[in-house]
Image (cartoon, rainbow, N blue to C red):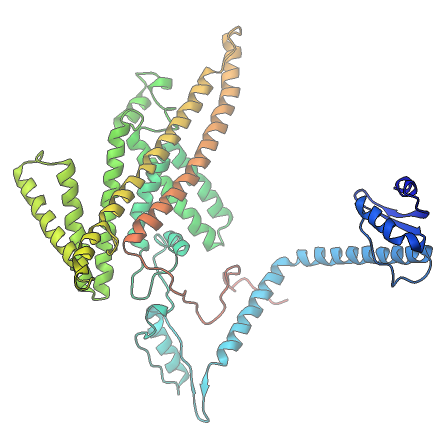
Length: 510
């Protein structure tokens, strides 16, 4: 740099102040008349100018002062690191205290909403139906308190709490992912459990994988037995593991084809037992299995329409039940029978579904027409069949049913990969070696391939099973009847997402 400046006829002095791996600080002195030229040349070389106009003293004194400031800063950093390390050792206590302070702030804010007069105070709020009797008994016990309860007038803005028994409660995770149901709707947890587990079982669909999943989940449940959140989350996969074992037994998948005549021999009793349990093998009858999946999807869609009837009945919306829900329950199965069954099942069956088709079509057209005005009634009646005006439609039904094909794709992927790893392990051998050496090689290397391959396949299959089963539930199924987004009910008291009170019987004062 100095040589480049000298080549331009500049008289300069350059001093290196400090240097690190990625940065160097230099001081450049020049004649006042050459200031602009030197600045431009330094900028072209990539240097960035620092303003030193407010700096007093010599260069050496400035360097000494900056060195001292750097030393003090490093000492401060070291002290802060020690403080952070000390704080981390008390992390749990800090988190608990923080949650306690947040709850105290919430309590103080709520106390400001109490209406007070000279002689009384009025407190309003929400309480769960199951806690009403307990609240009344508590008020009677204090005396001088009048407790008045009634139905909420806030409509769907009312906070919602859902309560299920300990076996169904783990499935609430799906409701939490989508949002709490509206106050005028209902808790769908019980209703989504069976469809979700059916989807999960078909996607994973292997007896050995299901057993591995159950074992892993129970390990984490035992390890984090104080955490209800971990238990509930793991129990979802325990249920999924059971469903996968059932589906695997029905489709003949035990680690792919690991337990079959291919590796155990044709006369093996275990292979015969596995074959006796098999109802349909997707690898040999993929199209038939795809048809079964479509039927499951269609039934699940109609099941969702039935839940829409339940929701409308709770709201006393009888017009929607008749024109919308019942219309689709008649029209969709009837049109499916017309297209795929025809007269195969006899003329009586054909007359029945044609009558259902006609009645359902009339109801849907009337339902669409009642939403239009004047000449637009005809147009709204027709587009109602497609689903633009209605909550459902032929287009939605066809698209949703076809989306269930992913169940076959995931199930086949799991089975094919498992069988591929079995085949690779079976091919491992050394042609020139003897029987004993090949036996050891197959046991060691083949075992590694089987263990690694099947565990990898299991984890990918389990993730895919959960994700796609949740998608089919939250989108294709919930879309038929569910309304989420309600605020969540919180008790007035200690409430935290990260701190749980598990009991005080073991707490001792020091």
